[in-house]
Image (cartoon, rainbow, N blue to C red):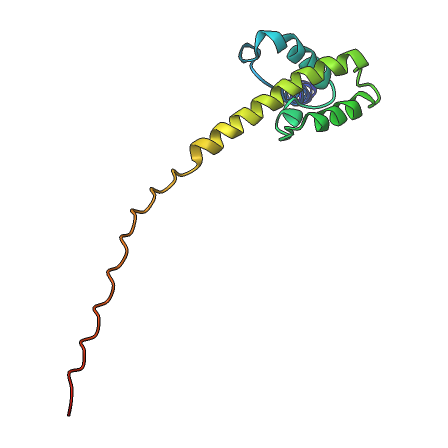
Length: 137
């Protein structure tokens, strides 16, 4: 019985570890022209880390993505070929552009409206001229 409990615990722990590596985007939300690229990205990149790692990295610069994927490709056991790298980058470039679009929309929506321009101010009337001194004393 003790072995069964230990085996069950190990199985649950293993299932919990593998489940986190596959989280990512809903493929039905990815446009058709990059869906295959996303699937290659998900297959290759989830071998070493969760998909949340690159997807939540905040990278929106295409050059930074190129350096990132090139570094991952060179990791032992990554299984990412040069051809895979191009496919993965095509997806990540789309993803970065989509993030930039969403950020721009949020920025535009969250910006307070500009205050109305103040009404024009009429020039002040000239002060009255001093009364002439009529005087003789």
